[in-house]
Image (tube, rainbow, N blue to C red):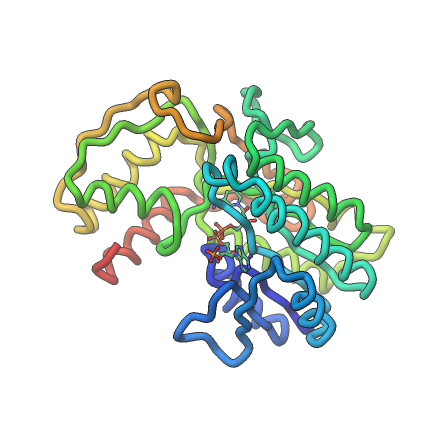
Length: 312
Ligand code: NDP
């Protein structure tokens, strides 16, 4: 199988790259080309529709895995065009090509499509109501994929972190190394999700697609929108607390910083965030036997990786 992976240098893309090679030849793309890139790596600005079309027509992927995204949630408020270009127009183009060429598409979306006013975990069937530009743009991407009629799965996830890239774990550790006292929001709750667990979930979806009849009759079971997140509901404050406790034990930090829980009203940010960002992952469990991984073990593994490389 020919596979195109976009966003291959990102948190999720870099976890997916080694897993996808079990299914066929993977061509990886991202905006730049890292020093250690293999021969099947293509540096490409995916907002360039012409070059994207040329790449697709040359590679003719049977599977497109689109992790590329504009993930700067606050910046999206002032850069809505770029956010929509990458989070909505790009998936629309990929889905259109997939439909015309009978390819499959795996795409990723976010808990931020919901307004966070619930207090029970969101189901895929719940009505989205994004509260910020990023959420709007991701929802537009979902809608375009659904409307294209291509065979697809959209995995919505939340609070993604990894041992590299832009994420809360590394931001907290960097701030702590500066010896700063930190005020952390404690009235937004969600499920932190290790990028590798989401990559493993994606891999299980592909595996099932290879065995299950994913044609029209079965598309309702094995296609559409699915929620995946790891198994713990935490506030950002709880999450930070856990990061620092593990980091001190692993020797990443000498001591934990002073932490103060604050309401989001005391921590104004350009983009409004949902207070409740919890996704119900029952559907992906029923269809693919994929179940939320342990937050404790995942964060421990990530902290150990950071400790092992001696830099944050
Ligand atoms: P990252 O930001 O780590 O990776 C996205 C990658 O896409 C980056 O390498 C980025 O490159 C690349 N990219 C963006 N724009 C372009 C472009 N114009 N041309 C080429 N490449 C581009 O994202 P994650 O891995 O964290 O996210 C994966 C998916 O999960 C996304 O769909 C995201 O919306 C979703 N998600 C993420 C959450 C999170 O907390 N991170 C939470 C919920 C959902 P560059 O850095 O150079 O822009």
